[in-house]
Image (cartoon, rainbow over all chains, first blue to last red; front, side):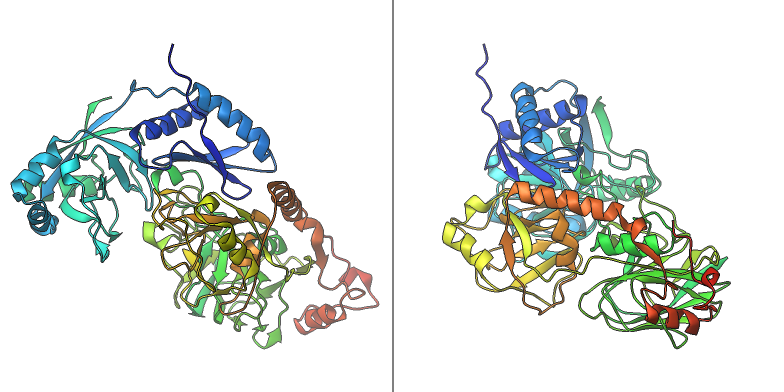
Length: 243
Length: 344
């Protein structure tokens, strides 16, 4: 008999949303419970819920207080959380091409220096990782991945950059990430992928789902340029390894 | 086809509607109008759906010229001096620009955002069901950026329907109500008390992403870094410098600073309208109060069509009658047929 799951905390985010918090820290087990609750709510909807947003350690549930009150919703959420068992079945796995270093990964050399190793070693370690989309947030398609090996954990830059390129692959803290749109970032830029995790007139518009498994594969700059054109035309470029 | 040409406009002016909820799990923030009640009032004035796309006009003045036919507009939100070719136009009412006429809007008085709804709506290509501008994500229609002079908003010719005004409850000057949480336990009781007991001002560096507050420094119990989690409109996050930021409709979908409290739904539009530099206060309420207020606010939105009045209803509004006459619509106090308007 498995141990009963500890109940999450229900934290009000105003009168129209509730944060269902499984942990206060980045915790893979908590993230799996977040995604499990998200799946259970999708399978057994609660009238009045308008949108759910999975993050590392909590599920933000938006609802319409005209249709359901905080207490009634909280009861139903706790009941589902108690039944929402983390599972690996049905996990999709993507292989995402990345060109590392040079103009596409301007921090690779500095990261290698800071960690007393070579750029090639950093790339080898990053490519060897088995990652999972813990959450997507901040800007469209910005995918935060868990599973970065401890050796590559590095605190973020003191001075965040105001503009980093679309498709940037970076590391920050204990995470690595796939950034879709150009924008500000305080992470260390290792490379770029031609993959668009968000592309407006493509079906699907959003490529990755929270919970998807991710591995990276190194490509050269020439391949990047080719795949970048293909991706711009609407191809996924990312390879779906297992459905 | 009629169109409204933007002949001059200040910053922070864009096409907005109810936004595009439903994709926050992919990092796509809904955006949408800062003050939904005013958006709905402007649309109701010209017979549109309450959350049809309209022009959200920032604090500075703007001018619009009708081309290709007459254009009927509804004006609501922060009041301004307004005229069409010199004829005064009242806020919270509709008005029609003849082909070639220009609507002149002054600075916002007693608020930040005004809404200009266009009868029949603004033509555009919805993205995720919305025309709302989200410049960072490259979304919005007919433009994916704030409006600039020379932009054109296409619509259909004015119906010639009689003009209306709308009776709205007087905007309360009461404190902005908040619910503590989701991370109020990151703050000691005396700092929570400091938050609700102090006077605050909105910084001039605020925008549609967030309103920066100026006031006493709010201290965290232990550090200002939390693990990023989801945000809502009205989330009040406290970064390391202790000066809170209230997240607005163009916020990031997730944030990594502790959120001490959240502005209640019913007060969010009123909060969005507070001008930079004007002092205001917060007041903590209970969940039961906040949700009761959310229901009352929902009822107010539903009641908007019942709040329309004929603008020529001189018995209630002599000024409106005079304006209507000046506006060229012959209205006779003796002949009820000219001013008794069928109101939907």
